[in-house]
Image (cartoon, rainbow, N blue to C red):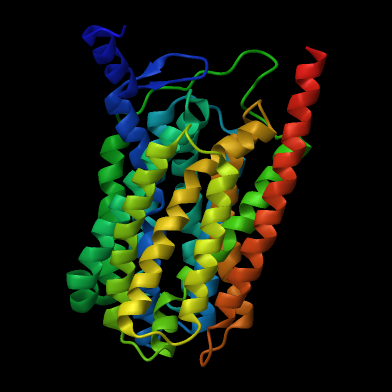
Length: 404
């Protein structure tokens, strides 16, 4: 029988992060580690509002919206991936401080720019963002229950994006336009500098022969490729939220309201994912989310009224965040050394870049529905790739059990 003392110990255990190998990370350190990834990805949550404001002001064409999102996301993914392969998991506070200060400076530098100049500078922003993501993913990949901590991270992330998107919708963008958005992001980055001073000095290495550093094996790469293809369509559609609203005959105000309500639904999705961690198989979640997103995009293709446009995007926000935490256990099953898990966030960030890039090629200023069709095709292909990785992982596991 479980005693009250045992229950208290178990609750206390859930408040800290137990590395797969290495020391326990304290609650304060955990919060600061998670804040690094949250700050790095705040822009992704308010990108439609900032870029939409620039487009309405004539400073950014529809094609350049996709290019800006692509340049920043691509450099973020490359930066996170290279950090996972080459950076040592030591002197983390110094790395965090340098990254957050650089991110603040680049956001201020973005204020007067438009079109290709903004594309170039947002690419630079991806470098410190990638380093901050690498710090967060380093903790998640080393934890005993990575999907739980990925769920905590996603919930914290969308909560931060929700608060910022709501602030943008009711005050920042209406009063200060895109410039106010960039200043707000810079302030958030400087607050992250304070959090960086409380990061653990280093992460532990895994046992010899199980090093978490380096490149993944072939099946790990296959899992990352499937992650990229499956995650790209959500970004391809989301970056064109405001133009899609306009094409449905809806105002920019409806688009901004849709954005923060969708993020509110994402908070619910992150909470559900955290609760389901360890209780449901990832393929069930991936299939459910794919069907849900296809229904959302089909709805948006038929010029829905404002209430249905908002409701569909809220459902889309929930299922998008729901599948996110389950990408980590997929990569760990494909590559038990966890090297692929260290690159999972990089694949998701690259998806956030390549999705808008593909959409920018097929949309025009008059018609952005091509992003919806692209999303539907990619998510079906990604789901098929997941099935292939799952079957190969299961076969490898059975062979290993037979040998042992």
